[in-house]
Amino acid sequence: MFLPPLTKSEIASGTLIDSRYIIQKMLGQGGLGRTYLAYDTRRFNEPCVLKEFAPFGTGSDGIEKCRDLFKREAKILHKLEHPQIPRFLACFEGEGRLFLVQEYVNGKTYSRLLQERQRNQQTFSEDEVIFWLKKLLPVLEYVHEHQVIHRDISPDNIMLPEGGDLPVLIDFGVGKQITEISGPSKINQTAFAGNMSLVGKVGYAPREQISLGLCSPSSDIYALGVTAIVLLTGKNPSHLMDRYSLDWNWRFYANISDAFALILNRMLADTPKARYQTTKEVLTELEELETKQAFSSFSENFFEAPTVVIPETNLNPTISLPNYQVQETFVYSIDNREHSYNQTQLNVLNPSFIKNCHQHLAYYIGPMANLIIEDVLAQNPQSTPEQFVELLAREIPDFQMAIEFTRKIFP
Image (cartoon, rainbow, N blue to C red):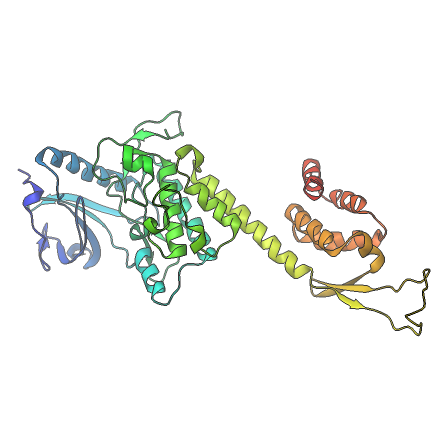
């Protein structure tokens, strides 16, 4: 008969479990049990993780429910096969205890990585967090497609393997299998979790999950957003939220672009309907953000500060000569080549206007925008801004995109 796990003590180092696993040390302890590092004697002493079912603070009536949760985790992990999720290896009962065996990830949690940076007065940068999000969101997408919600995303449950650059999502101990599906592939956004004592970490889980036990893919997105701002600021979520209004007040502590802040704020929206509903939506906006930033950086390098070259003249500068115009030559560096435009052109098409046109044109046709602008300027030196934009729009193959381009220049 299975003995009540409340009576079980920590397993000592060196203990052999199931005539196979040698306990090395305890890695952690949570609401549903303990986690140990062990060696598998039947796999050349390969390291693995043993998760022991040993809930604390649960009455006898709740033990069976917790046991069901533990078995559910085994079923969830068994069907999840992803390189950024630890492999499920076995589930067995021995010594009057229930055990789950998983692949051991040799690395550090992001909580520990952040602590190491903070010792040097550093946190994660915007570029690093964007990269991190783009590598984690597909993992969440995979999980959600398998009708599973992680429900416990935090820096403690994401690891960076030693020598690797892809984050690994761990600990599906409170994973929630979605039971209601509307349509062949559409997940019900408000699957009810029931009256559970474990509903994610306070500060990381959204309000509907903590208060009502409601969870959805957007609740995982919320927790991932909280984790992102913690990595950016190095502060606990409780220090990033106004204690009276419960509104997020993290922006002051993070040196990031406004565009990226808007994405994070939508991930952190208080109501589920105001958040991104799928990870694909977040990924799309992150990719668009990187594209815009790349073009912006490209444009800044494309148009350098103008160099004014005024030809020498023997004319007395005090004499008024209304019919005489000194031509100033402005030189721009394009692809390491210099191109000059005279003042007559720039009186009509100033540098900031040309720069704005280039930035938008590059969004639609890419690097060819360089040559297009160069040719149009050379062939139409007296064109007005409207004529100049019309000529550029003709170079965009898609008619609707050409109209969109024109409207962006002249809203």
